[in-house]
Image 1 (tube, rainbow, N blue to C red):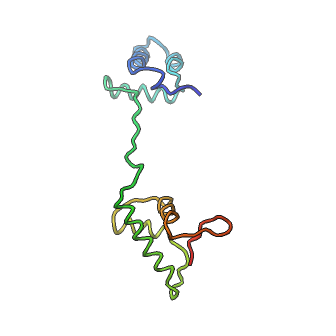
Image 2 (cartoon, rainbow, N blue to C red):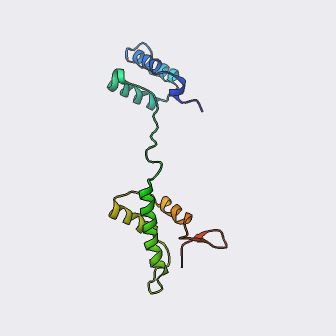
Image 3 (cartoon, rainbow, N blue to C red):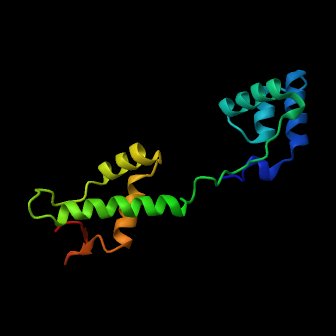
Amino acid sequence: MTEQIHKRLTDEQVKMILERYLKNEIGAEQGMDLLGLKRRQFFKWVKRYKEQGEDFSIEFKRSNEHRKISEAIEEKIQDELKIEKALIDDPSLPVRFYNYSFIKDELRKKHGEEVSLPTIIDRAKKTVFTYQDQKRRYMTVR
């Protein structure tokens, strides 16, 4: 697999190739070869270059804004897990397992927070809300 285009070429080089293609100095096949792109991606870039003009850039910007959840959300998850644990521990109720989807829905309804199910399950495993059985699977029962 070839190196990514933003690592191989500069903005100016890509702009020059796209500009030469738009002026019919080079063909589409030659432009695709120079940029190392397939047909569909090449024409997406041509369209984007036409729309953006001089503002066109191939720089890649990664967004890390949703990688971690705040301490406040952590506490809310713990609170909801405690409520669910109380239901499981109550012998008069038929509840025997955690309902992680319900916890997720409660976090959305009560607090307006979107948390993934794997995050909730991970937090339950890291706390005393679960235990491991002999088969090394995490159990969330009475």
